[in-house]
Length: 116
Image 1 (cartoon, helix red, strand yellow):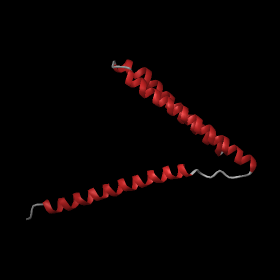
Image 2 (tube, helix red, strand yellow):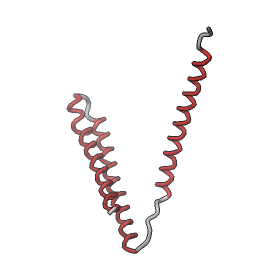
Image 3 (spheres, one colour):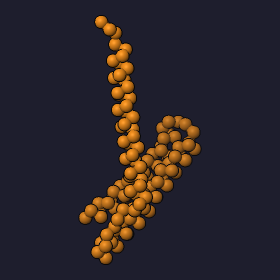
């Protein structure tokens, strides 16, 4: 059941990218009354993303079905783990910088208070 939900999630994301491609490439230039070529180019990018999502999702589903039929397992690929790890490191770095800025603001506020 989880395999089907995963497959549907790939499809749902691809359909969202397709809708974005259509909205940006076709309707945005008409609604905004601007030059069409940048929006068409961006729409083609979204359409390429949708096709890529469908291909990767189909490949992942095929591998998962094979693993289920043969009784094997489907480990995550290294590039998936590396991408998630890299995003988590960036998020932690961003949180640390935000805390540092808050600390500096608190220290600056303490030293700039008038005495009295």
